[in-house]
Image (tube, rainbow, N blue to C red; front, side):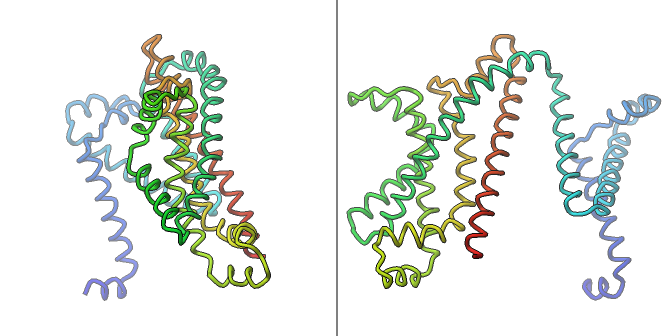
Length: 323
C-alpha cells in the first residue's frame, strides 16, 4: 500500500520524507537538550525571551539547526563531487575547531609547548612506530607462511602465537615484557620493550591478513610457477606475494594507523613519546586539556600522512594487477 502511494505520488512522497527527516532531527536535538544560548549570541535582543521561555527556545534552536542542515545539504548538492568532499571536510573541521574553542584553551601555552612536543614526542613516536611496523611485517609474513604449512609443529607454533598475542591486551603485553623479562635475567629498556610489544601484538593480527591475502590467489598461479621450474621461495616472492598485496595492503594500512596510535601506550613505561609529553607538560601549569588536544591533532595529522601513503601504495599495486 505504502509502496503504491510512493510510486503514484513521487513528489508528495519526497516532500513528506523531507518533512519527516526535519521533524526527526528537530525532535532528536530537542531530546538531547540542545541549548538556545547561541541564538542569544546571534540576536542579543532575543536573550530575555529565550530566558523566560526555555522550552520554546530549545525547540526553536533545534528547528533552526535542522533547517540550517537542510539548507547546507541543498547547497552541497549543487557542487561537483570533488567540491562536495572538500566542502564537507572544511565544514566538519570548522565545527571541530569551534568545539575545541569552547574549552577556553590557552593558545599561548600551546604555542610554547608544541615545538618541544614535535621535536621530542613526534620523533620518538615515529621512531618506535617505524621499527615496529618493519618487525611486525616480517613476523606477519613468517606467521602466515607457517599457518599455511603442512608441518604440524610449525602450524602449532604459529597458531599458539597468534592466539596468545591477539588474546592479551597490548598494555598487558608491554608490562609483561618490560617487567617480566628482568625476572628471568634479561633487562630490557623501555623503548625496546615498547617496540617488541607493538611488533608481536600487531604481527599476530597481520598474520591473519597476510594468510588471507596469500590464500586469495588461485592455486593455478603456484602450479604454473612450479611448471616453469620456480622453487617454492621464488613462487612466493615473485608470483604469489605481488598479486596478494592488492588484498593485503588495505587492512595492513589500517593496522599501521592503529599501531601509530597505540604507540601512546608505551608512555606507561616512561617513553617520551607524544602522549607522555602531553601528560607531563600539561601538569606544569594545570593545562591538561590543551596538551591532550594538541597531542590528538598531532596523531590525526600523522594518521592522515599514513592514509595518503597507503592510498599511493594501493594505487601502484592496482596498476600492477591491471597490467
